[in-house]
Length: 225
Image 1 (tube, one colour):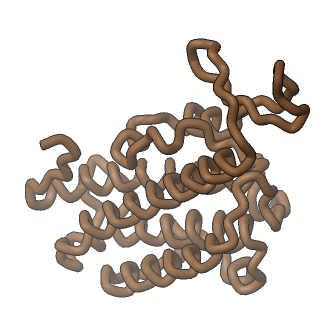
Image 2 (cartoon, one colour):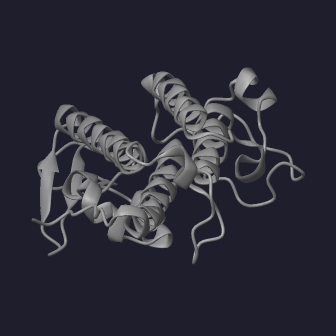
């Protein structure tokens, strides 16, 4: 597994990182495997930023990998909670109207997060779940039209994603490759890269929702007190 430095990245810091930077972070090698003086050929060596190497046992490496995977999933959960905290206090009338300068409503954004992120990326692509694949739709246009319904759809999709991620294998490939007529872009090579993409999109759109919420009632999501 290649989740270098994820234990050092907080959910709030993740918001500040661009998509390409996060994907590079996931995909860079986390350690090198080679024989060293006085050690067997199967020894693990962690390479630090100052070029000093620290020998690791396979057991300690596994613990580090598990901690890194947990940190990635915890960061995603934190951004999901950010989304919900931002929109729950908004009235349905404000949630269903377009408030310039954005060109979408809050319910449409929740639809995007529900269908294009949780159901498409995690339910369908990562997990290969047949029900998720059969329920794919355009979240921007085909989602719920009321805030209660949109919130319910999003929370149910998140719970389904959490169940799917119980078997999360960061270094394994996703289980389903969508055909070009469903998604024409590149699919992340590993489950870790895929979850990182969902994290980036969720954090980015949580920030977009913050902007709209502030324009409605002046509320600000502060990350530094």
